[in-house]
Amino acid sequence: MSVGITVEHPVPHVHTQNGLAESLIKRLQYIARPLIMRTKLPVTVWGHAILHAAALIRLRPSADHKHTPYQLAIAINVPARIDISKTNDVASTSKARLKRGRPMGSKDKHPRKRKETEKVNMIESDPEKTLDNNKSMIENCALEEAQNDDNEIINNEADNKNDLEISINYVNTGNLWSRKAISGFVIIAVYVDDLNIIGTNKEIKEARDYLKKEFEMKDLGKTKFCLGLQIEYTKNGILVHQSNYTERVLKRFNMDKANPLSTPMMDRTLNVEKDPFRPKEENETDLGSEVPYLSAIGALMYLANCTRPDIAFAVNLLARFSSCPTKRHWKGIKHIFRYLRGTSDLGLFYSNNTKPVLLGYADAGYLSDPHNAKSQTGYVFTYGDTTISWRSQKQTLVATSSNHAEVIALHEASKECRWLRSVTQHIQGTSGLPTD
Image (tube, one colour):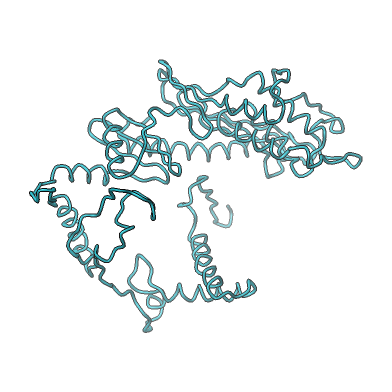
């Protein structure tokens, strides 16, 4: 800009790119909320709690500095960081916590107990000594010896080294764990208590055997159902669809015996007054609570976001009238149900014979919402000729021309492209796969 200010938009869904101001505000909230909850004061003292939290932040040393902001700015005598030694005292640990990989209070006839180790001082004033100490601790744990039932000494050097190698070499990215080895790779996707393991056969077997030793697990074989998604394996690739979920939704809304249609939405007209998707008029009445409009929108949005990009625009259009739907909008919902009735077996096919290239398309519909003078943004990204990301949403800005609407759509698509590229490159790099 002319005043020297550069506007940089962060990549979507990447919280690490938030600025220092956002991080400071979040830190202030994390300190002020417990203060009010602990003291049981009314919410009206929120301003005083924020000021008190700011004062505490100025008095506390940060993670990167040994001195507080007051000491760095003004040479005054305020408390600095104090290193307190910690010990590993297994004897003081309760019996319930001696179980590994099991929740507190669970019943087990043969609980596995932690191996007793010597008390080690974990805090050192010198960072180099701390690193040396941690390295020596890992080596001592790997060379630790155990006794069997006959009190015979058994050397567990090889086994412990393998366990440490598996546990240390994993790279954590949110709910995704990946490990790179000489012979292959393995990626573990975690969702609550469900694990999906992807990789080469040898690495998958090693990771699965190691997890079974540490936790109580059940191997269900190849993933066939996951969060409502059905996965079918063929010689040419993998098909991901939601036919069972679609049938349940149609049966839930009594549309399982309706006549199928070939398009996801009815025709629209350029006449604003005759548009079937216009907002509620004064002479129209809202749908009552007996019509499950919001439930239908939620069920359709899950389909549109997972495996059915062909209904994304129609669902987005009808979701705008969730607060005051009419019979015209409910007819649009039924139209989508009838379309799903004839296309319930459609899904996304990931072929194994295509070239892995990230390709994106973006478009804009100028004045797609003529009632509010808003345009529509739409983009789709494919990887190996299969759709992996898509979006259809009304633009928040008022475009003054079709060119302006296209620029807004390209801006949104470019942010998504940058995020997808960073994700794919990260997975390829941490897994040892060839990059594009």
